[in-house]
Image (cartoon, rainbow, N blue to C red; front, side):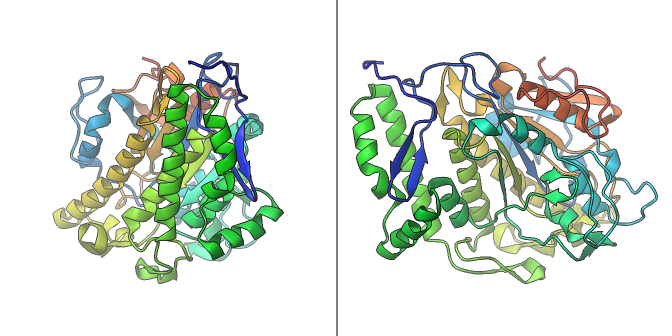
Length: 448
């Protein structure tokens, strides 16, 4: 390392009203950590990324199984990461099905995706579904980080009212549930997420206003601490810290340039101040914040909702698809509509590729940050026209700290519970459960 300084994993750069956690450095003493796949390794992280309204499954599902599968048109943007992800076919979210409750597939799809539980059909205050897999992990490993979990998204919502055939808006607006009646509302404003990650206490709130007033960077407040630390680090750690702090500043500048408001598709929902007008920029800013939170070990558990299920967002400014997403999902097998759905699917996958690129660019231990992640990407509906919840489009990226073998397409038997995947992931996170939701065991073959 060049210098003998050893620092705690919890060391942070501090200044007036600011606190910036550090990335993984060689100077940090190896130790067993909660959420680590192996002793002395970098901590293991998990994230769940959700897309709405189903997928054009013909253009999603690889024909071949195993490592020799060919990328389908929708998965083509992930070409550079083919050895970093696996496609899992055959998984089912049974509790998203009606089971006598009639319509409401979009609400049930999102509510059951991470809980594996049937949502109570109500648009009143008596909502009930179940704790989600991310929160089970957060309860176990959250004590090791500044934030037990991070919930972000790109489309707002509400926790009351009727949003889907008698189901509360809480079901179609929230992916994460701390308890059966307690949704974890997502934050969609990147500025507020940034301030949360890099601000301290109530005292810091006043200093945040001061930073805004004088156009000061959060780095200005920790500059002295950063300079003192860098002088005692080895060359590799100095480079890592410089790259990390540069990334923080660039992200801060991008957020500061975001336009104030814009209408959100046909819903005419005003986005809050600090949200980019361009949807792609919005997704990527949130992805950058997620990557930064993982890199600095601010949290090891996250959920990221690209859009609420049932969203009728227009993609005219993004890819030239002007019709609402939900309207198109009822394609009636019409070729033109299916092609437009596939364009939207490919757009979403391109944003996943951006996040994976960010995670893979960060060197951590003997590998990369992506190597120490389990990133689940998928939807609670497979075909939007049929509203079916079997054979879901599910993808898992990252090597899980060496416990996953990506680069494959695995086809599971029909009706295999999606929650079996979560049982296996929770075990790897050090949050072992015998069962979860409607699971019937761990999901085999993930390690090869």
